[in-house]
Image (cartoon, rainbow, N blue to C red; front, top):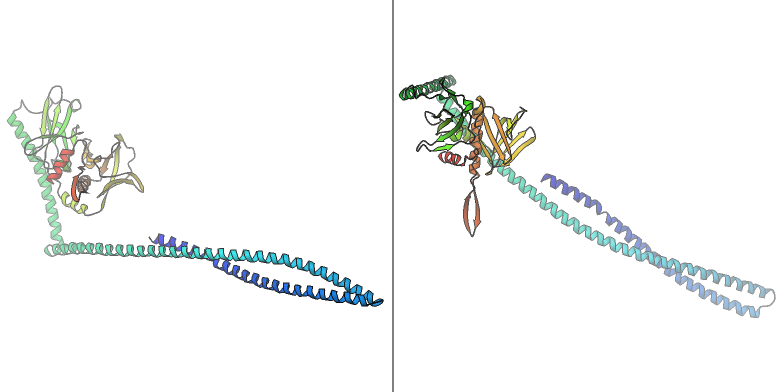
Length: 461
């Protein structure tokens, strides 16, 4: 708005320069006065010329009467005087012709100056009207700029006040924690908590191993499966199918398919694209039991997790903190683009906003799309040990990426955050016949054919 006001001010200065037409009008008026004066002088000359003609005529009549009475030398003088009078009459006639011509030119000049003066006055009036209009527009623009600046100042004050209140709450909370616990005690508690988590993870792995061995002993050595699931059954880890017997066939010769099982009825939901021996659980798998079906020419077995997939510690609070922001940035590396390996390993930035997602490299935008039913975002269904840090993103049909994040937490947070924003964009409304009708568009970010699973997971959340 400041730029608009600056441009309009420059235009007004331009118009002010154009108003120099007034000087031109003043000059035209001066020329018209001079022409009027010249016309008056011409009239006086006409009167004087008429008097000269009368005098010459009277003088000629007197000389004629004198020539009749004069004789001798006096008569010759009278004849010479008559010739001089005739010459003067001829000169006077010629002078009168010149004066007539000058009078016509003066009238023409006066008429031209008068017309030019009228045109100049008209132009000045038009420029004045145009200048008044432009000044009014400039005043309105300045007023709009002032109103916009005032509105922005009010909004910034309100936002700043809200931020200050939130900061004060955080400071009070920090002071309360500091008063309750000394720094050394807090650090000791953190170390103890970390040690307890490590012990819990190890005991969980050992418990899962014992449960598998118990199940094998109950089935007997004859029915012992050839494969087993290895890995932590929690979000942020990955599960791997491994052979546990010499009779196990090669995994490359087997077909693999992963499923989600509901905890109530045990209904299977196919995870499209999950056909590898390694699968990294994603946020949609939390609270579900995972099953891997292995089929070959000689056997067909199903492996399931010992229980539902556990959530990642602290991930929910982390995502809730990110939801308050307008946009969150994640550092990623493009592993694949449209199904083909991407040779460059340069760092890109994935922007996850409330209305859209954007992938950039420095100042260049690689992909940018608003949330829609064509967009898909899920964990990578397969891959190696880094599968828990990779995600599949399809901004639109015909364009897809496999992105590697800095950590498992960042990958899962990006998926949950984008799905949360997409869910917030679901509801739109239209006004029809004075009634408000809500329409659910159904934007659910997941993998191919994962709409039901993502909807169920969102409903549970």
